Each structure stands twice: as C-alpha cells, then as structure tokens.
Image (cartoon, rainbow, N blue to C red; front, side, top):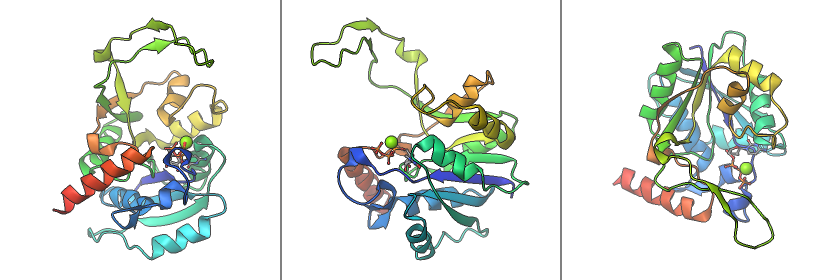
Length: 240
Ligand code: CTP
Ligand code: MG
C-alpha cells in the first residue's frame, strides 16, 4: 500500500506524572503505544508504520512491539522504529525522513491517542485519497473558550475576547496528508514554540488548505492522570 503512518511516541509524559515514557505506560495491561499501532494497522490502506521512540529507547520499543503482534486482518503493515527528538515536531520530522519513495499518503498519529476508532482513521484516509491534501479529524467544543491577557503573576487574568464556540473545533489525530506537502511543510516549518502545535498548522503556514472531518470522542489524548482513568473505562466498556 502507498499509505504510511508516523507515530510520534518519543515524549516523556511530564503531565501524566512520574514513571516510564508515556507511550510505554500500560492501558488495560498493554502499552499505550501498542494500542495506537494496532489502531493504525487495522486500516487496510496502511502498509507501513513508523514508530518514533524515545531517543534512548528505540531498542526497547522494538522488542516491545515484537512481543505484541498486530491484529490479523488479512494484510500486514511493516513496523519500523526510529529514535525521536527533543520536540514533537522534531520527532515527526525524523519519522518522515525514513519513508520510502513510493509513499503517497502519510498519516501522523499521536501514541497518546491509543483508542482512536477505526472509522476515524478510515475517514481521514478517504478524504486524502479523495483529493484533500491535508485533513484533520476534529470535534466541536463543549466548553466556552475565553481569550485572556496572561499575566503570569497570579493576579486574575483580564478577558480579551470570546470566540464564537460554534466556529471552533478541537483537533485530534491521525491527521492525513499528501506526503510531498507534509514534507514541504516540515522543511519550511519554524522552530516549535513559534506557533504551530500540530502538523496541519505547518501546512496552514504555507497558505495551503486544510479540511476537517468528524473526529471521535474516544480519540481523546491521554495527557493527565484523569485521562488515563477515562481511557481505562473506555477499554473496559469495549471489552464488555
Ligand atoms: N512526542 C514525541 N517527541 C517529543 C515530544 C512528544 O514524539 N519530543 C509525542 C508524544 O510521545 C505523544 C505526542 O507527541 O505521543 C503528543 O505529545 P504529548 O501528548 O504532549 O506527549 P508528551 O510530550 O509525552 O507529554 P508531556 O507534554 O506531558 O510531557
Ligand atoms: Mg508534550
């Protein structure tokens, strides 16, 4: 197949608290990264998965993945492991660098979104294959969002605006791209911290269109301890 997935999994998971790198922590007894790899391997188009491991942990991650076989779906995706970088953007770039020439469509999926349903993955791939060069899954917000003037000194922050909630979306992964476009966006990309917090954001900086397809509430990112409790509950419900 001509579709590949890059899975950035090199983060430490500082907000989750002390312990192993976040992607290697257990969810329902199985490392979060294994859930994420399996979710990507279920998509029929996906022929290659590039896991971007913690810089010093690539060998451990390779052994871990060898010990947890992929689902048998009639096709097999190759899984390669490369060491990651200091930021998510660096890690994605290192993953993109090992893609073979023939790959035309690339997905980027956070290891920290282990429970993304197959329908979301399929919807992203279908939209790219139908001609959209950059596709993000996203969901409407439930909270109202305020813009503030951050003070950082502990005093109450003045509100400077309230964007209309109906116009906002919370974006998830996998984000899907025409491979050449994503490579160009990463090559042109600024240093992280200068604005782009996702891959589609780099494409937007090139002035190229990005479209949204429906995401899924179960594609939430495991970031804080409460997210891990929720993920365990979702998994328990699925297994019931
Ligand atoms: N990531 C990565 N390389 C980095 C930093 C993050 O590959 N240098 C990956 C993480 O492993 C995760 C995804 O990017 O799968 C989303 O990042 P995030 O949820 O922020 O994970 P962490 O950076 O690990 O968490 P924290 O920010 O709390 O430390
Ligand atoms: Mg992070």
